[in-house]
Length: 407
Image (cartoon, rainbow, N blue to C red; front, side, top):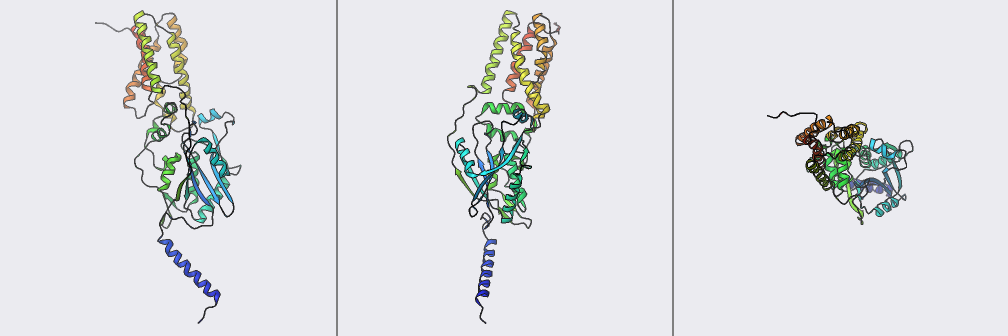
């Protein structure tokens, strides 16, 4: 029996498909899938030197050479011109946007910043790639593009991860973490070398930042997600596994970056000098028998203003971790409120109960800091010690409204 050419062609194609299917079953798990859908890649940008750049950035690249488009979908778009931008950012009520634009614009921005760009091509099926592309386009519509930003729970990286997870058929399985970590440890990885930024973070963040978090929760950091994406697998409903990333490459090398510290001394060195000056003041008061109450004006003003910020964030901000901050014992607005009373008593040479209360609170905090579960800011203990010199000096000069019985 002879086959006509059309039947022979069909039989040949069927045979090729069977061979291809058999090969595909035994193929390496990290081999990219053959698809006519767009190529979608995870882009990870290394940190910059500005405070809003030090954690890096994540975005998604959608490229289709045959159709001639190459876009970047960016969830990190914001404007300083928004009404009350700084206040809303502190309160955790700042809105970011999702926008897409040609890849070349994106690369040029990070070239000028001196950041590198690493591209990880996602190993998606055609259906998954098309679904992810459609979801990204839908997110960029005017009614959907704005979202409430949170620097840990909902940022440019977590939004990208959410979009990937929402498009795949199955679940993403990550390799086990090398060790357990806290949010603060991850943040310190990025603020290393930026001592004043780190001190500011640690003064505002509380003990909930020092609890061990799940591996999924640690992927809010761009470079952390890039690291784990390389070792992640997609587990299909039928149990089959394939690598999430099929190819990884650096498409923009890191350039030159310059960072100038806002102050020549580190926060800890600055606080050491500050405590030394307070000890000198206490010695002068002890030798002369006079209280230099102008020191209290400066000290209580600085403490109260810093305390206003800590208390404001503690009570009103929606950022995670700020409402469990035990450092509010030391940094709070009460010294600012009590300042007129303290000055009035000092001018009239009257004894003041504020110094007694201040001594008790600061001493209790020093004791509590030893067993506290919070990773306190490096400057808070020396600051507390320096503040303690004031009530002690007043006690030595007899300005406490408490008499100690002598045997």
